[in-house]
Length: 151
Image 1: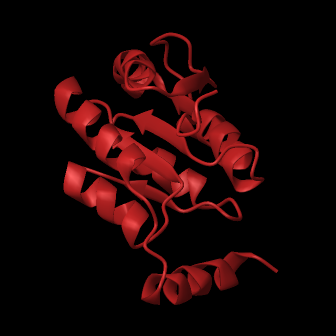
Image 2: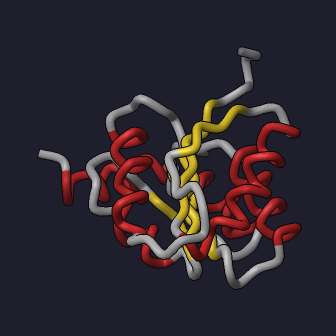
């Protein structure tokens, strides 16, 4: 594995399946690896069943970052944020994706697979993967988030 290469667990429900397939290829093209946690087709499934798989893998530290995709991105985001050590962010633009990492140290990116074109989802994903946590004043704020769930 290259020094900057990450392994990204990725999952979706039926509403995010098409976008997930495109993003897996894109993520590989920009130098990272993906591990597909499902769903593996566009049959109707319950998004929490897939969100929790990636959230637990990231929350336990097995992986640094993960990506979740459903129709709106909301359900995946709400589910993932129930897991300790997860800071899932729903991003609708490259700028919001970058800020979610820079200021909030987001470790899961949630995307609206049905609401944005694939090219925009790619730009959002790249901005998120290319961003780093700034620390400083943001460290204190992220710490306060963790005080709510970690005991």
